[in-house]
Amino acid sequence: MPAGSTINVRTLASLPEVALSLDLLANLTGMLAGFRDPETYEPILDSAYDPRNVSPLCGLILSVSEGKQLCAEGDKKRCEEAARSGRPVCYECHAGLIDMDVPIFHEGRLVALISSGQFLPSPPSEEGLRKFLRSNRHLRLDPVAVRDAYYKAPYLPREKIETMANFLVVFGERLCAVHGRVRDEYPSREPRKIALARHCIQEHFQDSTLGLTDVAEHVGLSRSYFSTCFAKAVGSGFSKYLQKVRIEHACKLLETSSLSVTAVALESGFNTLSQFHRVFRELKHCSPREYRKRRRSSGVSRTR
Image (cartoon, rainbow, N blue to C red; front, side, top):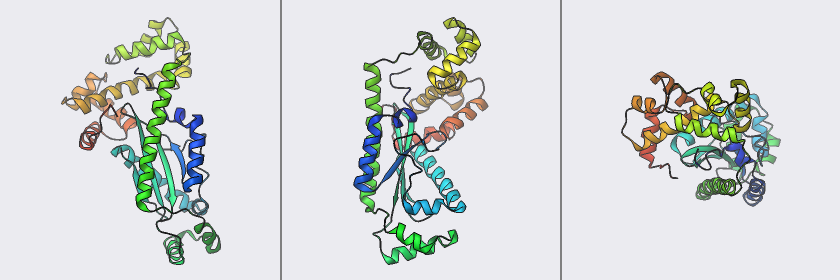
């Protein structure tokens, strides 16, 4: 696999620089930020900033079941939009606050999303408070508690929020670059046989018959023992890992070649077109044709 290709959202969230950086950002701007999984869009609760530590205003909204459901639905929708477009998405949530979702790419692959925001849409005022209460009257929030939380909520002009989104893009990409350099300079102690297995997969993933047994025999381990060791070392089961390798190759072909989707599927090691479509949607949350159209129209390259 290419250097740095194992970078993932948990790798980034666990970096010591993240805790300090996000804490400084919160103190400077009032902006709370947290990582989300690029496949499930769920918060990474063991990251430097725990997304459960929301602003007081959002805390009131989340204390109501309907508010919590609306937040979850809105978060997922906007994360999907950011992942599809490859660009930060700044938006007004159902409660009228400004949030953002920022996709982070490494070597052309979406490795994480950073969710942030919880800003007032305008400077705090009595009129703004009344508008917030009117817009959220269906949640039946305590007006006294809302008033107190409202005047504690941060505000930034729209242009500064967009600048902050761009800052998070740079921040995330720099984290990926730093992690990649550190890993290259200080190679991991990955078991030799797992390294051999990765190499075997990279060399033969286009063979649709390649399976766990083949790779286990190649490295001289029993099927069951190899499966356990591989999952522990890589953090993913063999089949899932193989699917990701194949889909990454397919993405490269979709972006850089004029091959038909069927040809791309076959060139990437898939037996059937239906299997290719199913796995592609699971990992990329769109169809191969949609992926090709978006990436080409947005001008996003895999050398990003």
